[in-house]
Length: 185
Image (cartoon, rainbow, N blue to C red; front, top):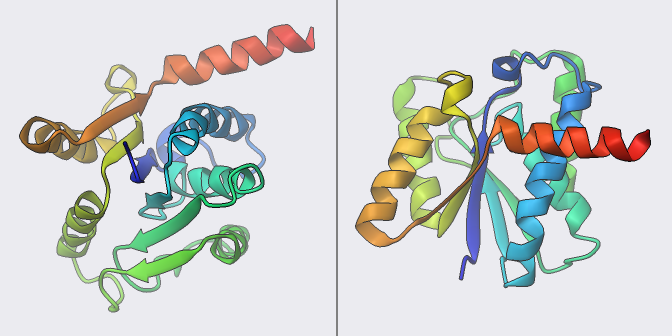
């Protein structure tokens, strides 16, 4: 049984999403929700993300919405370093602040501003230590991206200790979009 789940995936720019109004975000969130509901029903307690702008925050938003049905479900962001949103545009900063108000825990692996890649490596090591499995929005066929490293680590951990690896591909998201379009016609 998965008690704590790491959820991550592409950054928004890796998906060519540059606006919070992009229609693809809703489909990504529906794909995440469809995977999270059965886990919540089986006793999932925590969804933990690195909090990057993209799938991480959209997952937080999905979990916040799921709390109405599953009040025991909690959401956490474990960020690599302080001031992670420092260079973000104002609308993204406001969105991030809204997410922070809805989650149950926010932590920093390093209390310093960005200093180096070691902060991300330390964050990822902590995320993998604190979770029983990962749900990764990643599709190698669509091209390599930042989630590749998490996938590699998750598969290594799966072989060594039975860590659970689940993924959502671009086809999964596309089929949700196609179904919804059919339903709307």
